[in-house]
Image (tube, rainbow, N blue to C red):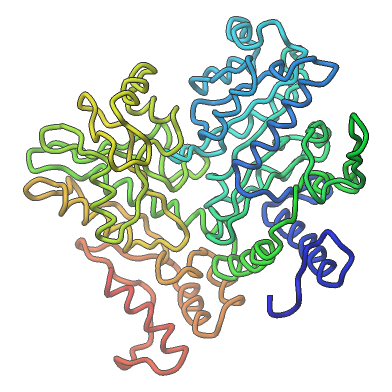
Length: 524
């Protein structure tokens, strides 16, 4: 911001031009960060992922209300039960909506199951259809099949014609590369909602990535805001306007864009790359931590043998497989009698130890219903009993059951020490008498995962060429170690990398780098 004066891009002044150039450059940089070719996709800046979803559904609503279809309630909407509340809310804009209760129902619909399809389509196969689901459950971290998108597009069934896909990638994009999502535009989602703050922390921005060949849907939106029109008349009875049509985003980004936040996004992408190298590095690191956390949680017991933790995850989803599971663990705690410990108490006690969790319904009603076995009438009962999501004044247990869960999410800045501290906290706070592990946590032989954020790449030779001198010394040491791991011996960990013996206080940058390895070895 100190390098120039930035202004509202909706004019021709020098500050406006500077902002416009910066916004265009950042837009392209963001697309390439996600692996989306700007020739095949456009990116629309919005306030958050929910705003991206709302933009899509407003367009479907207005398309359905056009002369061709006659009613805004005439578009079809299908969504998966793992959907975030923001996807669930879309149903209120149409009378023809359906929630798939399982992956198997989606598979049956894609294959043309007539009974399921009749319940959903109601003989309205010609109406526009939007199929929406999350790339990753924001509750459990379960990753849903990306192949559904291309199968819907390639289907020859009449009931699948005029169908489009919306992928909520807000949770998926936090720790995972989206290059597999966008590498082939013919198989990519028509619309993808994203949150930059979930990836970078700052700035607070969202985005809608649109497949250019599907962009015509968004041109049906009736509302227009400042900066999106080339001409507007107000004095005639009916009114008249013409949207900007140079690019898709020109006619959809209402009002003055938050250009200072977009400038911050440009910086965030650069810093993120310098710190971590790639999203693949982050994925490997966070998956390692998630597996360690999962193993630690499932081996926590009360002294009478009663498990402390109930983990909510799907059979067949393993925490060491990033294709089906992200670095998120959802759970509830039980006391030695097998009774639930209120999730509110767990979050509050963790907060007092500066361990920050999220608890409650997590904006995922389908996940809560599934894993807590809550039936629709129980949601209504909980509401009438005074339960409100996010309120500390709500009843903690209703008929002995919680109305929400505890979620631990791991990111690139988390370390093994963070995971172990959390496990120790649970044992000390909630394991009645002396908590125990039924066996030691198995740690796969790997290079050091938590010396510093930049060390999270497994290619240490390549990493050593990109970093500062003191970092290169560690990278070189790691690369020279043929095994690149920590040895597990007699329940103790020892570094297999040779390091130069030095004094207690390192002085040069190289000594500091070597010293960091020794300190981590000692701490482990």
